[in-house]
Length: 575
Image (cartoon, rainbow, N blue to C red; front, side):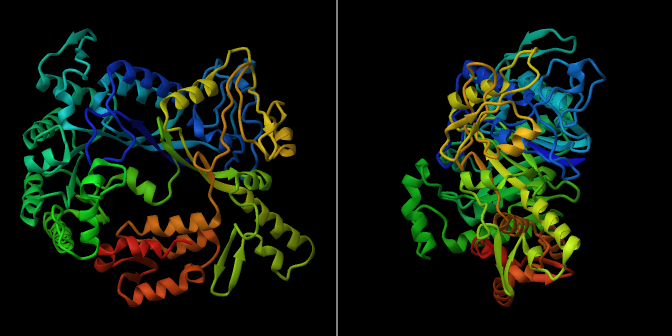
Protein backbone atom coordinates (compact mmCIF):
# COMPACT_ATOMS: atom_id res chain seq x y z
CA UNK A 1 0.00 0.00 0.00
CA UNK A 2 1.24 3.46 -0.84
CA UNK A 3 1.64 6.05 1.90
CA UNK A 4 -0.58 9.11 1.70
CA UNK A 5 -0.63 12.31 3.74
CA UNK A 6 -3.73 14.47 4.03
CA UNK A 7 -3.91 18.21 4.61
CA UNK A 8 -7.16 19.89 5.68
CA UNK A 9 -7.32 23.66 5.20
CA UNK A 10 -9.45 25.70 7.62
CA UNK A 11 -9.22 29.26 6.22
CA UNK A 12 -10.56 31.16 9.22
CA UNK A 13 -8.93 33.38 11.81
CA UNK A 14 -10.07 35.84 14.46
CA UNK A 15 -8.05 38.66 12.97
CA UNK A 16 -5.57 38.73 10.11
CA UNK A 17 -2.03 39.27 11.40
CA UNK A 18 0.00 41.97 9.69
CA UNK A 19 2.69 39.58 8.41
CA UNK A 20 0.38 36.76 7.22
CA UNK A 21 -0.03 35.98 3.51
CA UNK A 22 -1.83 32.66 4.06
CA UNK A 23 -5.27 32.02 2.62
CA UNK A 24 -7.28 32.97 5.70
CA UNK A 25 -9.73 35.61 6.92
CA UNK A 26 -12.24 36.28 9.71
CA UNK A 27 -15.69 34.76 9.15
CA UNK A 28 -18.98 34.46 10.99
CA UNK A 29 -20.14 31.15 12.41
CA UNK A 30 -22.70 30.67 9.64
CA UNK A 31 -20.00 31.09 7.00
CA UNK A 32 -17.75 28.61 8.77
CA UNK A 33 -20.55 26.07 9.02
CA UNK A 34 -21.29 26.35 5.28
CA UNK A 35 -17.61 25.88 4.52
CA UNK A 36 -17.41 22.73 6.64
CA UNK A 37 -20.42 21.33 4.78
CA UNK A 38 -18.66 21.88 1.46
CA UNK A 39 -15.41 20.44 2.80
CA UNK A 40 -17.21 17.29 3.95
CA UNK A 41 -18.79 16.93 0.50
CA UNK A 42 -15.35 17.12 -1.10
CA UNK A 43 -13.93 14.49 1.27
CA UNK A 44 -16.88 12.17 0.71
CA UNK A 45 -16.16 12.41 -3.00
CA UNK A 46 -12.92 10.58 -2.27
CA UNK A 47 -10.48 13.06 -3.80
CA UNK A 48 -9.77 16.81 -3.98
CA UNK A 49 -11.83 18.41 -6.76
CA UNK A 50 -8.65 19.65 -8.42
CA UNK A 51 -7.34 16.07 -8.68
CA UNK A 52 -10.06 14.84 -11.06
CA UNK A 53 -7.90 14.67 -14.23
CA UNK A 54 -5.28 12.55 -12.44
CA UNK A 55 -7.84 10.00 -11.30
CA UNK A 56 -9.30 9.82 -14.78
CA UNK A 57 -5.88 8.66 -15.92
CA UNK A 58 -4.85 6.65 -12.88
CA UNK A 59 -2.57 3.63 -13.10
CA UNK A 60 -2.68 0.72 -10.70
CA UNK A 61 0.33 -0.51 -8.72
CA UNK A 62 1.41 -2.79 -11.61
CA UNK A 63 1.62 0.15 -14.00
CA UNK A 64 -1.47 -0.94 -15.91
CA UNK A 65 -3.97 1.69 -16.95
CA UNK A 66 -6.96 0.99 -14.75
CA UNK A 67 -10.33 0.07 -16.17
CA UNK A 68 -12.82 2.90 -16.22
CA UNK A 69 -12.56 4.87 -13.02
CA UNK A 70 -16.23 5.59 -13.36
CA UNK A 71 -17.38 2.05 -14.10
CA UNK A 72 -20.04 0.66 -11.76
CA UNK A 73 -18.52 -1.09 -8.77
CA UNK A 74 -19.19 -4.72 -8.04
CA UNK A 75 -21.23 -3.63 -5.01
CA UNK A 76 -23.54 -1.63 -7.25
CA UNK A 77 -24.39 -4.86 -9.06
CA UNK A 78 -25.48 -6.49 -5.83
CA UNK A 79 -22.27 -8.49 -5.32
CA UNK A 80 -19.82 -8.46 -2.46
CA UNK A 81 -18.44 -5.01 -1.70
CA UNK A 82 -15.14 -4.21 -3.39
CA UNK A 83 -12.48 -1.62 -2.61
CA UNK A 84 -12.87 1.67 -4.39
CA UNK A 85 -9.95 3.56 -5.89
CA UNK A 86 -8.70 4.52 -2.43
CA UNK A 87 -8.87 0.97 -1.15
CA UNK A 88 -11.75 1.66 1.21
CA UNK A 89 -14.80 -0.56 1.57
CA UNK A 90 -17.85 1.43 0.55
CA UNK A 91 -21.57 0.82 0.30
CA UNK A 92 -23.61 0.29 -2.81
CA UNK A 93 -25.05 3.79 -2.95
CA UNK A 94 -21.72 5.29 -4.06
CA UNK A 95 -21.60 5.43 -7.85
CA UNK A 96 -17.89 6.02 -8.24
CA UNK A 97 -15.67 3.34 -9.67
CA UNK A 98 -12.53 1.67 -8.43
CA UNK A 99 -9.16 0.52 -9.67
CA UNK A 100 -7.10 -2.48 -8.73
CA UNK A 101 -7.04 -3.51 -5.10
CA UNK A 102 -3.27 -3.19 -5.36
CA UNK A 103 -3.63 0.51 -5.99
CA UNK A 104 -4.55 1.50 -2.46
CA UNK A 105 -3.43 4.22 -0.09
CA UNK A 106 -2.77 4.09 3.60
CA UNK A 107 -2.98 7.42 5.40
CA UNK A 108 0.05 7.98 7.63
CA UNK A 109 -0.66 11.58 8.65
CA UNK A 110 -3.40 14.20 8.72
CA UNK A 111 -2.70 17.88 9.32
CA UNK A 112 -5.38 20.49 10.12
CA UNK A 113 -3.87 23.84 9.13
CA UNK A 114 -5.08 27.31 8.40
CA UNK A 115 -5.94 29.89 9.41
CA UNK A 116 -6.92 28.74 12.86
CA UNK A 117 -8.48 25.26 12.85
CA UNK A 118 -9.21 25.57 16.57
CA UNK A 119 -11.94 28.10 15.69
CA UNK A 120 -14.12 25.19 14.62
CA UNK A 121 -16.08 23.41 17.35
CA UNK A 122 -14.56 20.06 18.28
CA UNK A 123 -17.59 18.11 16.93
CA UNK A 124 -16.91 19.55 13.46
CA UNK A 125 -13.27 18.48 13.63
CA UNK A 126 -14.46 15.02 14.64
CA UNK A 127 -16.94 14.94 11.75
CA UNK A 128 -14.16 15.78 9.29
CA UNK A 129 -11.96 12.99 10.66
CA UNK A 130 -14.86 10.54 10.51
CA UNK A 131 -15.43 11.45 6.85
CA UNK A 132 -11.76 10.83 6.11
CA UNK A 133 -11.82 7.46 7.85
CA UNK A 134 -14.88 6.47 5.82
CA UNK A 135 -12.96 7.03 2.59
CA UNK A 136 -9.37 6.06 3.44
CA UNK A 137 -7.41 3.39 5.24
CA UNK A 138 -5.55 4.87 8.24
CA UNK A 139 -2.38 3.36 9.65
CA UNK A 140 -2.73 2.42 13.31
CA UNK A 141 -0.09 4.96 14.31
CA UNK A 142 -1.18 7.76 11.97
CA UNK A 143 0.04 11.18 13.11
CA UNK A 144 -2.96 13.53 13.34
CA UNK A 145 -2.06 17.16 14.05
CA UNK A 146 -4.07 20.32 14.57
CA UNK A 147 -2.90 23.92 14.72
CA UNK A 148 -4.26 25.96 17.63
CA UNK A 149 -4.18 29.62 18.47
CA UNK A 150 -4.33 30.10 22.25
CA UNK A 151 -6.55 33.16 21.90
CA UNK A 152 -9.20 31.42 19.83
CA UNK A 153 -10.76 29.76 22.88
CA UNK A 154 -11.58 33.13 24.43
CA UNK A 155 -13.47 34.65 21.53
CA UNK A 156 -17.07 34.48 22.75
CA UNK A 157 -18.35 36.03 19.53
CA UNK A 158 -16.92 33.30 17.30
CA UNK A 159 -16.53 30.15 19.37
CA UNK A 160 -19.29 27.57 19.62
CA UNK A 161 -19.95 27.23 23.35
CA UNK A 162 -21.92 24.04 22.99
CA UNK A 163 -20.28 20.79 23.97
CA UNK A 164 -21.39 17.24 24.72
CA UNK A 165 -20.88 15.89 28.21
CA UNK A 166 -19.92 12.31 29.11
CA UNK A 167 -23.53 11.21 28.61
CA UNK A 168 -23.74 12.71 25.12
CA UNK A 169 -25.97 15.56 26.28
CA UNK A 170 -25.37 19.00 24.74
CA UNK A 171 -24.47 21.60 27.35
CA UNK A 172 -23.50 25.26 27.25
CA UNK A 173 -20.04 26.21 28.51
CA UNK A 174 -19.58 29.84 29.46
CA UNK A 175 -16.11 29.86 31.04
CA UNK A 176 -13.23 29.99 28.48
CA UNK A 177 -10.90 27.81 30.58
CA UNK A 178 -13.53 25.08 30.93
CA UNK A 179 -14.29 25.28 27.22
CA UNK A 180 -10.60 24.93 26.41
CA UNK A 181 -10.28 21.83 28.59
CA UNK A 182 -13.34 20.20 27.02
CA UNK A 183 -12.04 20.94 23.52
CA UNK A 184 -8.62 19.39 24.27
CA UNK A 185 -10.27 16.27 25.64
CA UNK A 186 -12.54 16.06 22.60
CA UNK A 187 -9.52 16.36 20.27
CA UNK A 188 -7.85 13.40 21.94
CA UNK A 189 -11.06 11.38 21.95
CA UNK A 190 -11.52 11.74 18.18
CA UNK A 191 -7.96 10.67 17.43
CA UNK A 192 -5.89 13.86 17.30
CA UNK A 193 -2.52 12.99 18.86
CA UNK A 194 -0.39 16.05 18.08
CA UNK A 195 -1.16 19.70 18.77
CA UNK A 196 0.72 22.72 17.46
CA UNK A 197 0.50 26.07 19.26
CA UNK A 198 1.29 29.26 17.35
CA UNK A 199 3.04 31.15 20.13
CA UNK A 200 5.62 33.10 18.03
CA UNK A 201 7.07 35.01 21.02
CA UNK A 202 7.12 35.00 24.83
CA UNK A 203 7.25 38.81 24.81
CA UNK A 204 3.79 40.38 24.93
CA UNK A 205 4.97 43.58 23.23
CA UNK A 206 6.30 41.55 20.31
CA UNK A 207 3.05 39.60 20.14
CA UNK A 208 1.08 42.86 20.00
CA UNK A 209 3.34 44.17 17.23
CA UNK A 210 2.63 41.02 15.22
CA UNK A 211 -1.11 41.47 15.70
CA UNK A 212 -1.54 38.22 17.63
CA UNK A 213 -4.70 37.94 19.73
CA UNK A 214 -3.09 36.13 22.67
CA UNK A 215 -0.59 36.88 25.40
CA UNK A 216 2.15 34.60 26.67
CA UNK A 217 0.06 33.91 29.77
CA UNK A 218 -2.85 32.75 27.62
CA UNK A 219 -0.50 30.42 25.75
CA UNK A 220 0.77 29.01 29.04
CA UNK A 221 -2.75 28.14 30.09
CA UNK A 222 -3.50 26.47 26.74
CA UNK A 223 -0.26 24.50 26.90
CA UNK A 224 -0.87 23.32 30.46
CA UNK A 225 -4.46 22.43 29.58
CA UNK A 226 -3.29 20.30 26.66
CA UNK A 227 -0.83 18.50 28.93
CA UNK A 228 -3.47 17.89 31.58
CA UNK A 229 -5.85 16.55 28.92
CA UNK A 230 -3.24 13.98 27.96
CA UNK A 231 -1.35 15.33 24.95
CA UNK A 232 2.16 13.88 24.81
CA UNK A 233 3.23 15.41 21.50
CA UNK A 234 3.13 19.21 21.42
CA UNK A 235 4.78 21.62 19.02
CA UNK A 236 5.38 25.32 19.67
CA UNK A 237 5.87 27.73 16.75
CA UNK A 238 8.34 30.55 17.33
CA UNK A 239 9.34 33.46 15.11
CA UNK A 240 12.59 35.44 15.14
CA UNK A 241 13.76 38.65 13.40
CA UNK A 242 10.60 40.48 14.51
CA UNK A 243 10.25 44.29 14.49
CA UNK A 244 11.87 45.62 17.64
CA UNK A 245 13.18 42.21 18.67
CA UNK A 246 16.66 41.97 20.18
CA UNK A 247 19.00 39.01 20.47
CA UNK A 248 18.34 39.07 24.22
CA UNK A 249 14.55 38.96 23.87
CA UNK A 250 14.84 36.04 21.43
CA UNK A 251 16.97 34.14 23.91
CA UNK A 252 14.39 34.92 26.60
CA UNK A 253 11.65 33.41 24.39
CA UNK A 254 13.70 30.28 23.73
CA UNK A 255 14.43 29.67 27.39
CA UNK A 256 10.85 30.28 28.55
CA UNK A 257 9.55 27.77 26.00
CA UNK A 258 12.29 25.23 26.82
CA UNK A 259 11.19 25.34 30.46
CA UNK A 260 7.95 23.69 29.30
CA UNK A 261 9.75 20.82 27.51
CA UNK A 262 7.60 20.60 24.37
CA UNK A 263 8.41 17.64 22.15
CA UNK A 264 8.86 19.83 19.06
CA UNK A 265 9.82 23.43 18.34
CA UNK A 266 9.50 25.18 14.96
CA UNK A 267 11.68 28.28 14.82
CA UNK A 268 11.12 30.43 11.75
CA UNK A 269 12.54 33.75 10.71
CA UNK A 270 9.99 36.43 9.82
CA UNK A 271 9.65 36.96 6.06
CA UNK A 272 8.25 40.28 4.87
CA UNK A 273 5.73 39.05 2.29
CA UNK A 274 4.49 41.25 -0.52
CA UNK A 275 0.80 42.12 -0.27
CA UNK A 276 0.73 42.22 3.53
CA UNK A 277 0.53 45.28 5.85
CA UNK A 278 4.02 44.41 7.04
CA UNK A 279 5.32 44.76 3.48
CA UNK A 280 4.00 48.30 3.27
CA UNK A 281 5.45 49.12 6.68
CA UNK A 282 8.79 47.31 6.62
CA UNK A 283 9.70 46.68 2.98
CA UNK A 284 12.25 49.50 2.82
CA UNK A 285 13.70 48.33 6.12
CA UNK A 286 13.97 44.82 4.72
CA UNK A 287 15.85 46.13 1.67
CA UNK A 288 18.29 47.99 3.91
CA UNK A 289 18.95 44.78 5.85
CA UNK A 290 19.45 42.80 2.63
CA UNK A 291 22.02 45.35 1.50
CA UNK A 292 23.92 44.98 4.76
CA UNK A 293 22.84 48.39 6.08
CA UNK A 294 21.32 49.08 9.49
CA UNK A 295 17.50 48.85 9.37
CA UNK A 296 15.33 51.15 11.48
CA UNK A 297 12.84 48.64 12.89
CA UNK A 298 13.94 45.12 12.00
CA UNK A 299 16.95 43.36 13.53
CA UNK A 300 20.14 43.70 11.51
CA UNK A 301 21.46 40.88 9.36
CA UNK A 302 24.17 40.28 11.95
CA UNK A 303 21.63 40.07 14.80
CA UNK A 304 19.50 37.69 12.72
CA UNK A 305 22.52 35.39 12.32
CA UNK A 306 23.14 35.57 16.08
CA UNK A 307 19.53 34.56 16.73
CA UNK A 308 19.92 31.55 14.43
CA UNK A 309 23.13 30.59 16.19
CA UNK A 310 21.49 30.89 19.61
CA UNK A 311 18.61 28.71 18.47
CA UNK A 312 20.98 25.96 17.34
CA UNK A 313 23.08 26.20 20.50
CA UNK A 314 20.37 26.46 23.17
CA UNK A 315 18.03 23.84 21.69
CA UNK A 316 20.94 21.51 20.99
CA UNK A 317 22.15 21.74 24.57
CA UNK A 318 18.61 20.89 25.71
CA UNK A 319 18.62 17.65 23.68
CA UNK A 320 16.63 18.77 20.64
CA UNK A 321 17.64 17.37 17.25
CA UNK A 322 17.90 19.94 14.48
CA UNK A 323 16.42 17.76 11.72
CA UNK A 324 15.17 20.38 9.23
CA UNK A 325 16.17 23.96 8.51
CA UNK A 326 13.51 25.45 10.83
CA UNK A 327 12.52 22.47 12.97
CA UNK A 328 13.83 20.87 16.16
CA UNK A 329 12.51 17.84 18.02
CA UNK A 330 13.28 15.56 20.91
CA UNK A 331 14.40 12.18 19.48
CA UNK A 332 11.44 10.32 18.02
CA UNK A 333 9.14 13.36 17.85
CA UNK A 334 10.04 14.72 14.42
CA UNK A 335 6.93 15.86 12.52
CA UNK A 336 6.19 12.94 10.21
CA UNK A 337 3.77 14.94 8.09
CA UNK A 338 6.38 17.54 7.21
CA UNK A 339 9.09 14.95 6.67
CA UNK A 340 6.82 13.25 4.16
CA UNK A 341 6.41 16.53 2.30
CA UNK A 342 10.15 17.13 2.11
CA UNK A 343 10.77 13.57 0.95
CA UNK A 344 8.11 13.61 -1.73
CA UNK A 345 5.39 11.44 -0.16
CA UNK A 346 2.07 11.74 -1.98
CA UNK A 347 -0.44 14.02 -0.33
CA UNK A 348 -4.02 15.16 -0.84
CA UNK A 349 -5.22 18.59 0.21
CA UNK A 350 -8.89 19.15 0.97
CA UNK A 351 -10.40 22.59 1.36
CA UNK A 352 -10.05 26.06 -0.08
CA UNK A 353 -6.76 26.51 -1.96
CA UNK A 354 -5.37 23.17 -0.77
CA UNK A 355 -2.72 21.50 -2.93
CA UNK A 356 -2.16 17.83 -3.73
CA UNK A 357 0.71 15.76 -5.14
CA UNK A 358 -0.14 12.45 -6.80
CA UNK A 359 2.23 9.99 -8.43
CA UNK A 360 1.96 7.04 -10.83
CA UNK A 361 -0.52 8.90 -13.01
CA UNK A 362 -0.90 8.18 -16.74
CA UNK A 363 -0.48 11.41 -18.68
CA UNK A 364 -1.00 11.20 -22.41
CA UNK A 365 1.30 13.16 -24.72
CA UNK A 366 -1.54 15.07 -26.36
CA UNK A 367 -2.98 15.99 -22.97
CA UNK A 368 0.35 17.36 -21.82
CA UNK A 369 0.86 19.36 -25.00
CA UNK A 370 -2.58 20.91 -24.63
CA UNK A 371 -1.80 21.83 -21.04
CA UNK A 372 1.46 23.40 -22.19
CA UNK A 373 3.30 21.13 -19.78
CA UNK A 374 5.55 18.92 -21.83
CA UNK A 375 5.04 16.25 -24.39
CA UNK A 376 8.18 17.15 -26.32
CA UNK A 377 11.68 15.77 -26.00
CA UNK A 378 12.96 19.18 -24.92
CA UNK A 379 10.52 19.41 -22.02
CA UNK A 380 11.24 15.88 -20.79
CA UNK A 381 15.01 15.91 -21.15
CA UNK A 382 17.81 16.84 -18.79
CA UNK A 383 21.14 18.14 -19.98
CA UNK A 384 23.94 16.20 -18.29
CA UNK A 385 27.70 16.52 -18.30
CA UNK A 386 27.85 13.80 -20.96
CA UNK A 387 25.03 14.98 -23.22
CA UNK A 388 21.26 15.13 -23.14
CA UNK A 389 19.44 12.37 -21.25
CA UNK A 390 15.79 11.75 -22.01
CA UNK A 391 13.26 9.18 -20.98
CA UNK A 392 13.45 7.76 -24.49
CA UNK A 393 17.19 7.18 -24.25
CA UNK A 394 16.53 3.48 -24.77
CA UNK A 395 16.08 4.29 -28.45
CA UNK A 396 19.79 5.08 -28.63
CA UNK A 397 21.03 1.73 -27.32
CA UNK A 398 22.66 -0.86 -29.49
CA UNK A 399 20.14 -3.64 -28.84
CA UNK A 400 18.26 -4.94 -31.84
CA UNK A 401 15.02 -6.71 -32.50
CA UNK A 402 12.65 -7.74 -29.75
CA UNK A 403 14.98 -6.69 -26.92
CA UNK A 404 15.23 -3.16 -28.26
CA UNK A 405 11.47 -2.89 -28.72
CA UNK A 406 10.98 -4.14 -25.17
CA UNK A 407 13.24 -1.42 -23.75
CA UNK A 408 11.54 1.24 -25.85
CA UNK A 409 8.17 0.09 -24.52
CA UNK A 410 9.49 0.16 -20.96
CA UNK A 411 10.63 3.74 -21.46
CA UNK A 412 7.30 4.64 -23.02
CA UNK A 413 5.54 3.27 -19.96
CA UNK A 414 7.81 5.39 -17.77
CA UNK A 415 7.11 8.38 -19.97
CA UNK A 416 3.38 8.19 -19.42
CA UNK A 417 3.52 7.49 -15.67
CA UNK A 418 3.79 10.93 -14.14
CA UNK A 419 3.44 13.00 -11.01
CA UNK A 420 0.85 15.77 -10.95
CA UNK A 421 0.32 18.68 -8.63
CA UNK A 422 -3.13 20.20 -8.36
CA UNK A 423 -4.61 23.05 -6.37
CA UNK A 424 -8.18 23.74 -5.31
CA UNK A 425 -9.74 27.13 -6.10
CA UNK A 426 -8.99 29.96 -3.69
CA UNK A 427 -12.39 31.58 -4.23
CA UNK A 428 -14.99 30.04 -1.94
CA UNK A 429 -17.89 30.36 -4.39
CA UNK A 430 -15.91 28.63 -7.14
CA UNK A 431 -14.69 25.96 -4.73
CA UNK A 432 -18.24 25.22 -3.61
CA UNK A 433 -19.49 25.12 -7.20
CA UNK A 434 -16.84 22.60 -8.19
CA UNK A 435 -17.46 20.38 -5.18
CA UNK A 436 -21.21 20.32 -5.74
CA UNK A 437 -20.73 19.64 -9.46
CA UNK A 438 -18.26 16.84 -8.80
CA UNK A 439 -20.44 15.19 -6.19
CA UNK A 440 -23.86 15.70 -7.77
CA UNK A 441 -25.21 12.25 -8.54
CA UNK A 442 -28.16 9.97 -8.03
CA UNK A 443 -28.12 6.36 -6.96
CA UNK A 444 -29.46 5.09 -10.28
CA UNK A 445 -26.54 6.35 -12.33
CA UNK A 446 -23.75 3.85 -12.83
CA UNK A 447 -21.27 6.12 -14.60
CA UNK A 448 -20.32 9.78 -14.84
CA UNK A 449 -20.01 11.71 -18.08
CA UNK A 450 -16.71 13.10 -19.28
CA UNK A 451 -16.76 15.63 -22.11
CA UNK A 452 -13.71 15.40 -24.39
CA UNK A 453 -12.30 18.69 -25.62
CA UNK A 454 -9.93 19.66 -28.39
CA UNK A 455 -6.84 21.82 -27.86
CA UNK A 456 -8.96 24.95 -28.01
CA UNK A 457 -11.39 23.67 -25.40
CA UNK A 458 -14.19 22.95 -27.87
CA UNK A 459 -16.42 20.05 -26.94
CA UNK A 460 -15.79 17.01 -29.13
CA UNK A 461 -17.69 14.31 -27.27
CA UNK A 462 -19.58 13.75 -24.07
CA UNK A 463 -19.34 9.98 -24.21
CA UNK A 464 -18.96 8.09 -20.97
CA UNK A 465 -15.42 7.52 -19.83
CA UNK A 466 -14.40 3.93 -20.30
CA UNK A 467 -10.99 2.45 -21.01
CA UNK A 468 -11.57 2.45 -24.79
CA UNK A 469 -12.81 6.02 -24.80
CA UNK A 470 -9.81 7.22 -22.79
CA UNK A 471 -7.49 5.54 -25.25
CA UNK A 472 -9.13 7.19 -28.25
CA UNK A 473 -9.68 10.61 -26.72
CA UNK A 474 -6.53 11.62 -24.95
CA UNK A 475 -7.48 15.21 -24.32
CA UNK A 476 -9.49 15.17 -21.09
CA UNK A 477 -9.94 18.68 -19.80
CA UNK A 478 -13.24 18.80 -17.96
CA UNK A 479 -15.86 16.71 -16.25
CA UNK A 480 -19.61 17.11 -16.09
CA UNK A 481 -21.62 15.27 -13.50
CA UNK A 482 -25.24 14.61 -14.38
CA UNK A 483 -27.58 16.63 -16.53
CA UNK A 484 -27.30 20.35 -16.19
CA UNK A 485 -24.20 20.19 -13.99
CA UNK A 486 -21.50 22.80 -14.32
CA UNK A 487 -18.26 21.83 -15.98
CA UNK A 488 -15.08 21.40 -13.97
CA UNK A 489 -12.33 23.14 -15.95
CA UNK A 490 -8.79 21.95 -15.29
CA UNK A 491 -7.09 23.58 -18.24
CA UNK A 492 -4.88 26.09 -16.44
CA UNK A 493 -1.45 25.29 -15.09
CA UNK A 494 -2.20 26.80 -11.67
CA UNK A 495 -4.90 24.26 -10.87
CA UNK A 496 -3.42 21.20 -12.56
CA UNK A 497 0.28 20.79 -13.37
CA UNK A 498 1.98 17.76 -14.81
CA UNK A 499 5.50 17.62 -13.37
CA UNK A 500 8.28 17.17 -15.91
CA UNK A 501 11.39 15.14 -15.20
CA UNK A 502 13.17 18.46 -14.59
CA UNK A 503 10.55 19.44 -12.01
CA UNK A 504 10.82 16.12 -10.19
CA UNK A 505 14.62 16.12 -10.11
CA UNK A 506 14.74 19.74 -8.90
CA UNK A 507 12.18 19.10 -6.15
CA UNK A 508 13.96 15.94 -5.04
CA UNK A 509 17.07 18.04 -4.42
CA UNK A 510 15.87 21.33 -2.99
CA UNK A 511 13.17 19.81 -0.78
CA UNK A 512 15.39 16.95 0.35
CA UNK A 513 18.20 19.32 1.24
CA UNK A 514 15.93 21.03 3.77
CA UNK A 515 16.45 17.94 5.89
CA UNK A 516 19.69 18.03 7.86
CA UNK A 517 20.29 14.42 6.76
CA UNK A 518 20.20 15.62 3.15
CA UNK A 519 19.52 13.51 0.07
CA UNK A 520 20.58 9.98 -0.78
CA UNK A 521 22.60 9.55 -3.97
CA UNK A 522 21.29 6.00 -4.32
CA UNK A 523 17.67 7.11 -4.02
CA UNK A 524 18.35 9.70 -6.72
CA UNK A 525 19.82 7.18 -9.17
CA UNK A 526 17.18 4.55 -8.36
CA UNK A 527 14.35 6.98 -9.00
CA UNK A 528 15.67 8.80 -12.05
CA UNK A 529 17.99 6.19 -13.59
CA UNK A 530 20.94 8.56 -13.73
CA UNK A 531 23.71 9.54 -11.25
CA UNK A 532 23.29 12.84 -9.45
CA UNK A 533 26.68 14.03 -10.74
CA UNK A 534 25.52 13.59 -14.33
CA UNK A 535 22.92 16.30 -13.72
CA UNK A 536 24.50 18.47 -11.02
CA UNK A 537 28.23 17.84 -11.39
CA UNK A 538 29.24 21.49 -11.80
CA UNK A 539 27.08 23.06 -9.04
CA UNK A 540 27.92 20.22 -6.65
CA UNK A 541 31.64 20.71 -7.18
CA UNK A 542 31.32 24.47 -6.64
CA UNK A 543 29.13 24.22 -3.52
CA UNK A 544 31.35 21.54 -2.00
CA UNK A 545 34.45 23.68 -2.58
CA UNK A 546 32.70 26.64 -0.92
CA UNK A 547 31.90 24.38 2.05
CA UNK A 548 28.19 25.00 1.66
CA UNK A 549 27.58 21.27 1.14
CA UNK A 550 29.12 18.08 2.51
CA UNK A 551 29.21 14.66 0.93
CA UNK A 552 29.54 11.63 3.17
CA UNK A 553 28.41 7.98 3.10
CA UNK A 554 26.41 8.39 -0.07
CA UNK A 555 24.52 11.46 1.11
CA UNK A 556 24.70 15.16 0.25
CA UNK A 557 23.68 17.69 2.89
CA UNK A 558 24.03 21.32 3.95
CA UNK A 559 26.86 22.46 6.18
CA UNK A 560 26.25 24.99 8.95
CA UNK A 561 27.35 27.71 6.53
CA UNK A 562 25.03 26.22 3.94
CA UNK A 563 22.13 26.47 6.39
CA UNK A 564 22.82 30.20 6.79
CA UNK A 565 22.76 30.61 3.00
CA UNK A 566 20.17 27.96 2.22
CA UNK A 567 18.10 29.99 -0.26
CA UNK A 568 20.91 30.66 -2.78
CA UNK A 569 22.17 27.10 -2.30
CA UNK A 570 18.73 25.65 -3.14
CA UNK A 571 18.49 27.87 -6.20
CA UNK A 572 21.48 26.05 -7.69
CA UNK A 573 19.35 22.93 -8.10
CA UNK A 574 16.59 24.49 -10.21
CA UNK A 575 16.76 23.04 -13.73
